[in-house]
Image 1 (tube, rainbow, N blue to C red):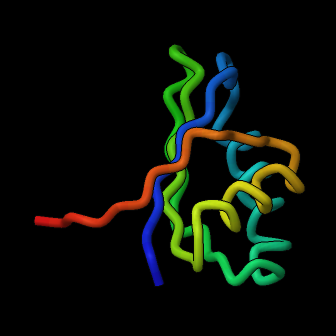
Image 2: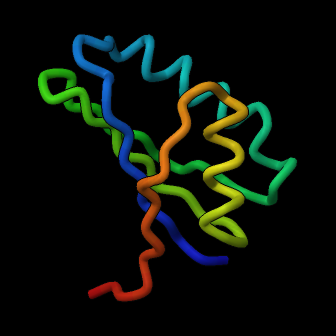
Image 3: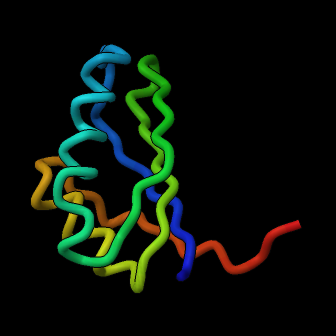
Length: 82
């Protein structure tokens, strides 16, 4: 499985609980696309959320996020690790 990092904007002031709820919406449907969302990080001041996932394609990750209510086009495949 490939690994992906995606970035969401517009989450200024979001709480840890709200991030957890958004992450749980992804987890509830991730198997539909063969994706697994591992971790989500939040910077509430900048409104940025970063999600680490694995799955068959960037498009599969994007489809799950869109269905869960927080779409993003900013998804990067992580091909180099040190």
